[in-house]
Image 1 (cartoon, one colour):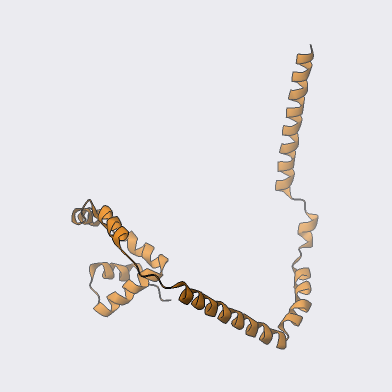
Image 2: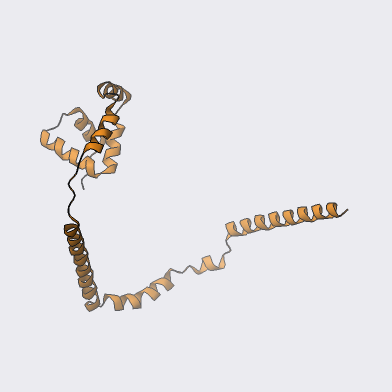
Length: 162
């Protein structure tokens, strides 16, 4: 996917590019969050204020009313289930074909032989021998806190017993 830079988005915003390029960039905005963020960063307060003057105050309410009044055509369950079954069946066939190809090619048998060797080579023996400093510090804090609470409870028990 081709991304556009800030200058291109500025030209898009000012409409100083060809109509074909404008439509191409607009379609790209629907697909790319990164470019959408760049484009939105180019919008300043002056443009927001002018848009607020154009958009009526009851815009949201009228849109919500239109959505409530909109009646959509639903497809029948038979067609829907049939489509889902065809899609799932197609996925299973694709996975089965890939598994058969990998098995015939010896991928799985080589994987079984290679993985233990790779795992053994990645073990860092120095890390095993070296103590974890952060864990030791946190362990000391926990132990000291526990001892403090025990001493405090014992002190309270002794005072209550007197």
